[in-house]
Image 1 (tube, rainbow, N blue to C red):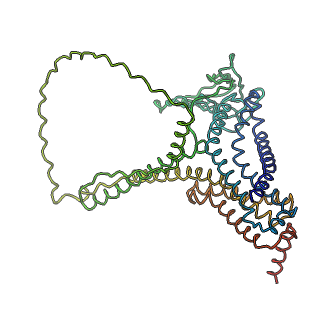
Image 2: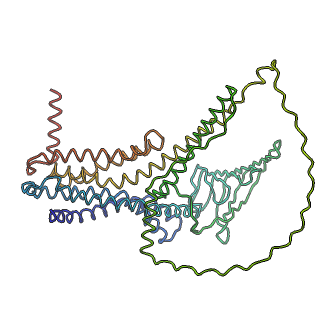
Image 3: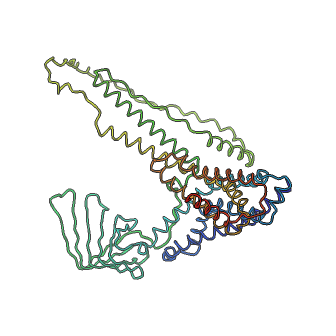
Length: 518
């Protein structure tokens, strides 16, 4: 069995590397085709363009590694079955579960490596790619303007809309500019045409407008609306650079730029906010009931905060242990010198000023018996307060579900390697003579089922229509059950040396259809 395991694993290396390289190259070419035109139009250096595509590789690898595992299993096992090597193993007393053992161990290893890559490497590269794309988007806004769309001109508070834009010359037609830089003044500029260019020095952007009118309104002068016409008007937007400036400060990360532990912290905060909102809702309900029943008021109670899981605690302990063993120990600091004793400063004597006693307030008189009922109406919670608490709970729940989806997605995509091993082995042994048709067709079918189910489940879970765990793990469960059923059926077959191509499957389906029609 050791010889068999080494032989099978050695046969997997070449198809896996080829599949991984081919799939990654195809998806990278897709990214290049989508982004290359906009990046070249920005006037960027080739180093920055290459950096964008290099930072896109980890995201692509996260999807192509499970695909390559499936294609490698399909190709290797179908090749061994077509050469009757699987039949020879079955005749020698080797069962399907024994053939599965090295493949399953390899799938578990690839799942562990994929999870470490997705959880520790991918968030940082996604954050760097997102920051780089934001910095690129701020460069040369002339090429970023779109026709018939309100475009922001960073870093100013100008929003520009033009019916025609010539990115090469900077000429504009049908220009409308919304100036919201001052909260007290609202200004809208309309122009028949215009011209956009950089001022000398390349730091400021000049907008020269022709034949237009300015509408201006001041909030402190509500009765006055100013209209000014012009033949030529020049506007300068300060600090719009024609050079790429890299922002090295830490930006706010989204769910795609966080590791599992960071997302667990966000989920914990959202869970705490939801528990506090529920406690406030119960307090308002109890307070209103006591107000209606004329009972004494109670103090608001605080909800206990949920306890986080042990995964991140264990991971932090493991990192600390590795640092203690791999990194050199720090030397103990020397004892600090004794501090100098400074005599206390003399403070002036405090002058005591007598305070007159507060006047005694008379006790409130009880309401007479003939007081109208409207004056004794209970003071209940406002509708706005109740709706605000409900909105807090809903927002916290949606945020918790969104981040839990990403956490389960990391695990589900990683363990998809095991599900693909089971499905690939079952298909390869069931159709041993299908050849490359099985590799392409079977792989495409499995990919479609998995990733369509994953995308649909993510959408439903983000909207709160399905639990995050079920939505992310359902494709894995379906493929795993299908693979196990296929392996059980294949293991019951006495031999695999005849048939086994797609024509047999088509004939079986045709026979079933004819039998049902009769």
